[in-house]
Image 1: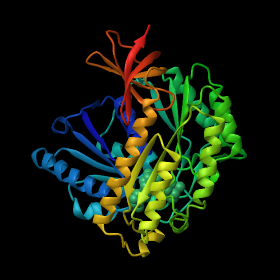
Image 2: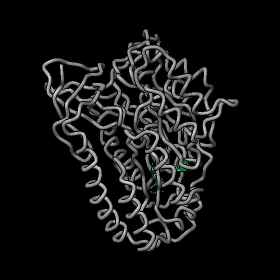
Image 3: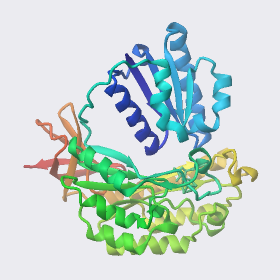
Length: 416
Ligand code: 5AD
Ligand code: SF4
């Protein structure tokens, strides 16, 4: 049986899709990248912005065309949108066989068993992956006023530290070199008193694990103890994704983020002082209800002042159930687009200039891919790096001298 899986959304979804794929492969299915050749199609959905839901429905339109040709095709919709728009999907897309929400993703094996009677289980395959995501927390209890996640993924739950370490050990035993710990706010991890810093210490003791990354962070819970741990622990990569969301105190308050811009900036500077080689990236939302020119200019100035290694800019999208949904979405789409373009152009210039500092320097690259005689990997700061090579170095950490820098990537020559 061939299966095709499409993933929309964040790393949590990528991780869930990886688990689904592993399960299917371990039960003798073959993954295909051609939907026309599939007997089973899975769409893993996101609902963080309206555009993600729109994309899911247009993909469902394409899937329906395949089902019209092949009525035996099994179609499953999973993930966040499957959680909160369950009824609407069922109503609008009668051809969908099953809908499984993000909260129940662990029941995938039971659900799929109803459609595909797997008779035997294959031996677990060894993963070729260089890095693996490991979920350390589910859900979120922060209720940022714009965000649908607490409604679709439920309250925050920390996974047992021992279980996490076992998953990491298993991954490392199968050849994985880098682990990415995932949670909506890893800084509030708490397993019976084991906080995130202690968890990092435990995970970093695992032999043969080369690199640890984690995401995402919430400035309100990012502790001094954590900064010190990162500074002193070589296995932890020099990259922190620290969503700011806005540079205006009025908007931050309306977003229920529980910090001011001054507090964010102070945290940012403390991290930079203790870990000078760190790359800090961020998210901002523009066009939140009530965002004035002044508020936007505060965000723009914050981006110029702090100089992020990368900035992800999202246009505000009203989400059902959230408290901001009751507010008037009063920044017009045109204004949102203008602000988006202005900030994007400026922040890309900043990131490119920061990356320019690597030119002439040597960086350690963990190679993830080899295609057309080009190796692709990342350095500790999470920058993508490309270099020409006659040999496939996938899974190895090699030294590369950087010759070129763009806003999101570097290229160079390997040093033998
Ligand atoms: N509208 C726009 N952007 C949003 N994000 C979360 N919810 C919304 C929304 N309703 C952004 C935040 C978050 C990122 C993953 O998505 O910036 O950090
Ligand atoms: Fe959403 Fe805020 Fe939770 Fe992040 S911390 S998932 S933005 S509610």
